[in-house]
Length: 453
Image (cartoon, rainbow, N blue to C red):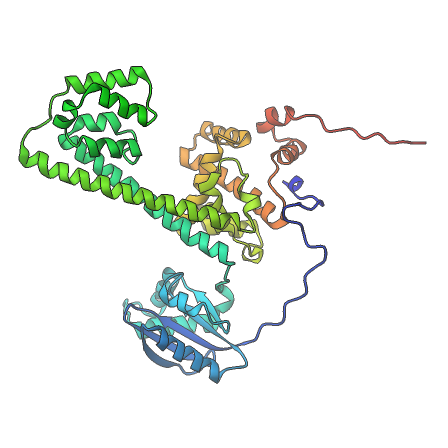
């Protein structure tokens, strides 16, 4: 692993020739705000001393009201900054506050606030002023245990929103495809048999649009059907002949118009919806590609084995550009949910899956590890060894993701591209037997001759 750190500079992303100038000292925190947000009205509790009296305010959910309040608060404390704790990691209130450079925002996990409230309210009592007061107390007394929000560069923030939104549309496409398949099975099973491998494909959608039921399909000429399959790059004569034979021999599942007509309309609407969702995904792919091309870390993630145009931008969005966010690999492993959780009490000890994690971030890392198995020889060997050790498929993939994250973290921190040959050389130096077949196949290192004259 140390082999990945070299003294040479990457031509695509050179290391600085001299250390940057130290940043000016940050202004002190002079005011603490706990903000309990809602759709219509927000409750805010303000303290000017960590243990001092609190003032409660209520604001409507309007940008001008938030501007008036926080600009007025800054006017009363112009020599320092204002810490704001909010039970939100994204959303309209947080987006409205991100524009102020005098605010230090602390997104608080809802579970953190719930456990903090439960420590003092065993009855389970809860209301907005109480939550705002607890948020203010939490940030005033325990800010050293919380992580402030650090804004990434514009391209990273764009990638995070674009890639996560795209994933949502992909899941919507999957759900629509499943509903469409279930509908076809209820009145048109032959249609599902012929194009059901990928109902979101252009061929499947056009097929169902032109022949929405068995009667229409059997009325079509064989030459028309053959030309259709040819036009959609399905040109295997054996497959086309089998399809034509199945169409000629098919019998309707039902001819009851009370079933066929409503189900056919449902099928047509699902196909139209699928087409719209697929167009949306294509637009997102285009926009993500444009943004990723300008990202400062694209040189690192684009060439990774198995990443491709979908997962490489997602990896760049996970890592970002601010190395201080993850000064150690362990922090990144825990944040992504790849590292397991250890529980120990007395003589009892156990390790289990890390359930508290950002789902999309975790999916991005695990899916990349899964895709790398077919493209990276050492990843395939590690995965196969984990299966032989009795681990489940997804446990083996998470083990591989754990290793990939440590490698990528080192490349990211040292600003060096991933080099598989260097990594295999480091495994050879450490004597790792699992990968012996790989590093023995490497070309021998060039020998250097020393001129003693």
